[in-house]
Image 1: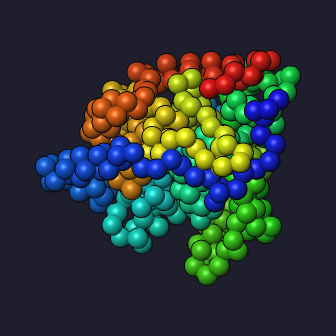
Image 2: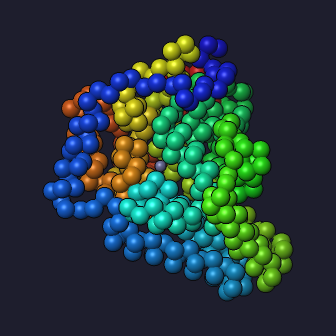
Length: 369
Ligand SMILES: [Zn+2]
């Protein structure tokens, strides 16, 4: 089929259309908002309080599981709590730090991003994959790593379809749980040793980046296996590590998918000859992304504003606590410029939309987005 991707396009060759006035207008209005309200884009006291609350939740769940739990219902409850706490660290602390949205001081941002290393990932590789690739080439098939889940799933209309994809709207939710094991034990090691994460080439890791990475891996392995194995049987350690990491994988993957792999989101494949994308960068970000549950304070708190993903893609270096206010500016400006702005009213409607998108992509006839 002609629309199926065969070769990986080189991201450096992809070109967006010229700036169309949408982003300058947005930037001006958002800057005016911060002047009028006298609020800081970063270093917000509420963010430091939120960080303390989430880290306390994380430490309490871990300590309860390792030092206190004696029955399996206790251990199960604490492992599930730990999986949500680890996800909250990733969504809120690490993600803002990795984007430089936490503080104006690079060292503080680096410390916050380093929380990913303590959870078994690599903030160094994440920055390269997420900040550069995902944030620039959102939903561009063959480049955006977030829509590549291997042959078991078909998330984009330009990806190859296999017969078993007809069931993917049922089984992919389960497979999402394994994504954490992949980055804990495979992706970062491959990035370090063979210089590749997935299809992306990675430059050699050097100096402080290497030190941070190795210290992070050592601390993760000590906290996950070293200390628990000193206190418990190995099969208990493996079981509860699996439950906590699997839960984290499902929670994180589902939240990511609700922003881009849902029915109203657009998917692109650059023109093979010109490598052009028909819209400007900012318009591309809006039409490939969908907000959800904007009115839910609980969802906004837990997901670190990832339910305001459109605002995050347009202003990734602004602390996520400001996204609800920015959403009103973005939605109004998008309407003025004729840019489609989509938001699912609730988390439930977004989950349903992801289910329907997976079912559509799994059907025999490819339907272009
Ligand atoms: Zn991001």
